[in-house]
Image (cartoon, rainbow, N blue to C red; front, side, top):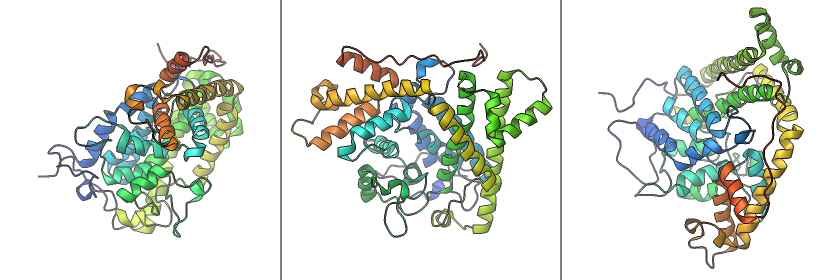
Length: 415
């Protein structure tokens, strides 16, 4: 009889039957693998539910059909499972990592993260990956036997290292962390439950990281076009997208814009996914890993785009950065959201008693850094809606975040 949740995997896949276990030992489930249990714990967490009202690019109330962190996360999970299945990896671990990859994001998207990082600069800064680790190892308080979710080692490793190693072979931080250093939360947990910060993560984490790129390239193009921040003609500046639009026009001459946008988004996903499967398969064939440890010890990721698609990905991101993320209307809302986060931090730092009882408990006489981190945890967990309401309870006036994108009459979805 097969173990619970067992299915075929390639020899180099992460095998739940060989998990390195959990920080707090637990008996196994008779019906689910360890990675399936992790996925389920993530889905049932408070932090996951809050993603429904956390910004992706647009503040959530600007339109019912723009992506939020939750809808983005679900799209990433779908792409990650498809990739894992094609490459012979553990689909449940890939899905768990996709579902958890944005748990540490603040209200108001990257604006909130930047604002909180500035507020926390004297106290070690703010990093959403480190915050995700804090959530799943400490801040979620649902289970009788432990704080956090007590996830398997492989899930925690992938959560922390899905963007690559944090330490180089010489033990110094990799470029991403060279300036600010590796966040204290990661180092503290690594000392307790070592995550091999100088190695790559397993292939399922690498899949989840690129599924994230694929999903937000496609859906930010979709949202930006439907919001009227740019139009289809503007995409001629991106050769890869121009080629896809020519293909669509050849197959469906005169197709209505809303359908053309959807055809474009689905082709971006398809081409990127097919390329990643081909390139990943080729790299695996060259490496010939006998087990997942060989992938972790490799000199480079085994899951990657080809040079051509990597260039297309970079071109799309440059276009979106200039035309969407830095659009004057988006930037105006970002400035107001930044002010809300900074004001909240200042108010709670001046008087931590303004936080709810469960958040201010135990702070009397605590070091300033500990108080600041508690405030950061509280604000980071807020949804956009809650942050606005909290600000209104503390200040006489609150910035108005409502903004109507310059939609050109394109329907966001069928009624």
